[in-house]
Image 1: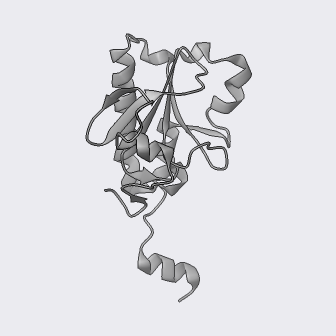
Image 2 (image 1 turned 90 degrees about the vertical axis):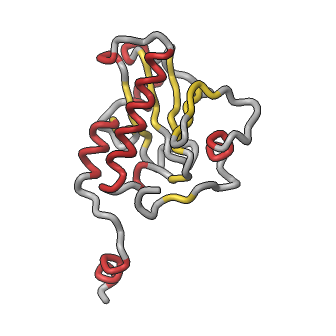
Image 3 (image 1 turned 120 degrees about the vertical axis):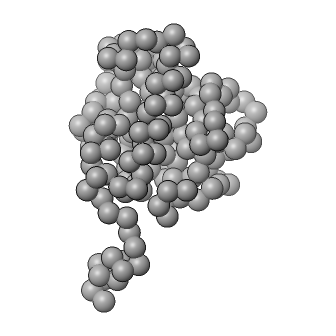
Length: 161
């Protein structure tokens, strides 16, 4: 587990149930020891999938620089799912995260959308990179380079001790 921002399972989190095979209704498209991918229940593009880590992490705001590789692996996993589904044009793909308070489930999830050019016009506003609502995977990795992990010493310094 990277950093100290996650725990393995949150009983109240529906995505934790998906991640640990405790939900019989959700069709998992792909999974490995670290991630699970399934279809979004309210798709805005012909291919709209969610990639979640098995560990419970609340959101992209819970991450720091130690999670850059995690975000990169999530994106790679999402692209593998697209290839499995016959999508080969990786230039017409959108990968990103909703940012609090615009998240519907408090469990980190990467939106994998293809073709990006076919995102529903009525939902474009929810998936526009660079807004307060949605951050592209690459932009998140860049932002995380500037976020130090919280340590006891830095927390004490923050509090003025």
